[in-house]
Length: 144
Image (cartoon, rainbow, N blue to C red):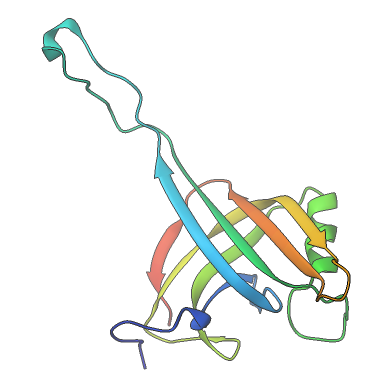
């Protein structure tokens, strides 16, 4: 059943392929369009722009795990794709557990892992932060 009304952000996650990025505590999608200047003398002193290149990125932060026995996408998997310069299929959608919610929006596309940061402060959980940069179109659909 599709999500209705205001919903809990805990249910919105990043997936790589069909696997949820493990132990995420926050995630975000950013979509933008470049606006090249098209101002001329005829613009009467007002700036004019045109729609240019579109771009998108995903970020997620969480608690790091290196346990390869789980079904989630973990820090080691992220590093492997980054080191191989491999583009991965990513999705930004709502889930119940780790299953996408049927009828909800899903944004998906191919992305490179731009950066991975792992932090291990004394007497605190190890954390990670990963940034995905889209290559090509980001699509929006409804989860079937």
